Structure formats: structure tokens, C-alpha cells
Length: 191
Length: 228
Image 1: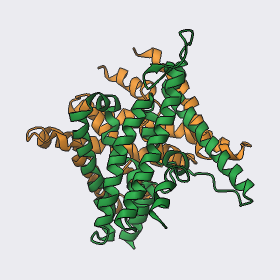
Image 2: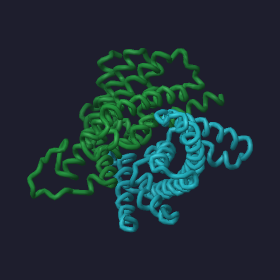
Image 3: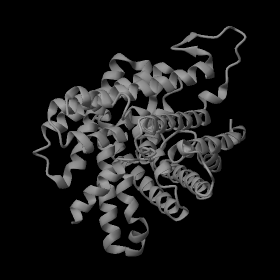
């Protein structure tokens, strides 16, 4: 597939959050403030690309040659958990400003379904390494975009007069539905 | 704290996706039809009951610092077995659930219950808790799936419920419908809880927060323990 087409597809048409339902917990949990949302999004981009690289190598060099494909889930989640731990330690030691910005989000990402989801998706779509990395980057970019938009909406929602029972997650989900509907309009761009 | 109470709390009072707001991704993704929702729920029951039992068995052996990693490994091994079982005995279901079968491992319910319950309670209690929560999750998914299937396809469990004049409401089976439906169900549950406690003369309950008691908090806590 064309790289540009994939960019459009991953960000607008098949947005990982709004069309593929991955990563809803941070989407609803970390979208109260734009700064926080941006930090979370950046951390997801960073971790998703690295995790895809490592899990791709694991899959192609270890699991497939030895016929261990069925262990994919177990190995991938361990690779991601270890990776996140190492990235955290590395950033803390070597790049303190970046650690300050992303540090608090990193442990939350281990079990973010978007990261594991992207790693498994690129295997199911049978992409090469370059394509996998590109896909993980644009898909998490789409995640960040949706998260930022949601944070923007939620900052306005704070001052809206909502019925008590709609507050919190429920209005968040309804807003997500409306956003998803908007993104749905892009579907005509790519068949 | 009786076993019955631990079991029944997952069915209504703390029903996972609607009151605890746990495990939203599969709730949204695999509820296009009622049977998909039910199949997903069954897989989650299997993993949740066994992970709760195993974690409860080894809860005194696991060092506190690495407990989240241990929970993840236990859950992941169980998910691998579910994947293999489904491939062997329920292949069409496995295909229609797609990527969300391996993603059970990062479902907040598994780690949330492990951290909040199984790591602190004896085996039978944990099994009851897992079974109750699992059944609650299945009921919610089946309910949402049925709702979306009835209006989106005009069917329930694959058989038509409306006459031939019915025009399917496609919005319901697409992504936006999932979000809006779940949002409105949550609102209805909140409304009910507020109404109930008003009638009983109790203070208003807290609105279910997103991600309450989710693995995010669990892992955040474990980090504090490691550092502290």
C-alpha cells in the first residue's frame, strides 16, 4: 500500500481509537486536560514504535523459526512490559527532561491495548519491518490526534451544565461516538 | 463476607463495564451481535476465574515488587490457552472476535480483579469473585450486543425479530453506535443508582469514574512500592 494512503487511512479512516476501539482506557482516563493528553499521546507514539520493532523481531527471528507462533500473546506482552521498564530507566538516567514529560505515563502504557494491539495487528497484516514501524507510527499518531481532540472537548464540557447521571465517562463515550461519526465521513476517501 | 455475596456483587452492584467501568475496549468492539458478546464473555470468564484462583493460590509467594509482572504472566498464559481452545473448538467465533482474543490479557478486568481482590483473598472467595464478575461482564456484553444487533441488523442471535418492512439502523453496528450506546447505558445506570439511594435516603453515590481501579492505578501503585 502507498505510504501516503496508509497515513490517511490510519489517522482518519481506520483510526485506532475511534474505528478499531483500541486504547479506550487512556482515552477516557487521560483526556481531562490537553497537556496531559499530549504527554500520553507522545508516550504512546514512542512506546508503540519501539514495541513494534522489538515484537516484530521476536516474531520473525524467534517465534516463527522455532514454530512457537502460539506463544505470541505471552511473548509480546512480556517484551512490551520489559521494554517499558527499560525505556523508563533509560530516560530517567539519560534524558531527564523527556522523562519528566513522559515518565508518569510510561507505566500506564504497559497494558494499554493500543500498544499490544498495534504489535499484533502488524503481524496479522503481514507487514515487513519498515512498513510495520511506519504503521505503528501513523496509527499512534491517529491515537494522539483523537486524544487531543477529546481533551479539547472535555475542557469545554467542564463548564457545561450536565445532568448528574451523564457526567464523567458516559458523556465522554457519547462525545467519542459523535467524534467517531465525524471520522466516519472520511471513509469515502479510501475504499 | 460470604461467598454468595462475592459472587452476586459482580452481577449488578459492581457489574464490570457498566458500574466499575472496566474493560471498555472489548465491550465496544465485539458487541456487534449478541452471540459475539457472549463468546467474548465466555472467554473472559475462563481467564478471569482461573487467573483469580491461581493468583490467590500464589498470593503469599509472590514478592510485592514484581506482583504486577506475575499477574500479567499468569493472565497471558491463560489467554494463550483460551486462544488455542478457541482455535480448536470455536474457530468461527475466534475469527469474528479477531484481535480482541489476545487482547484479553490487557483487559482491565483481569488485572483489576487480581490486584483488588485475588491478591488479598482466599481461593474460594476469589473464584466466586471471578465467576461473578465474569458472568456480569458476559451479561453486559450480551445485552449491549443484543441491543445493537436488534436495531442494527433487525436480528437477535441471528434470527429476525422484525417484519420484512424493517430498515436496519446501520449506525448501531458501526463504531459510533457502540460509543453512544455504551455512554447512554452508563448514564442510565448512574441515574438508577442515584434514584435508588435517594429513595433509601442515603447520600448520592459517586459517579463511576473512568478507569476507576483500573490497571493504571494498580501499576502506578506498584511503581511507588518499587521506588519507596
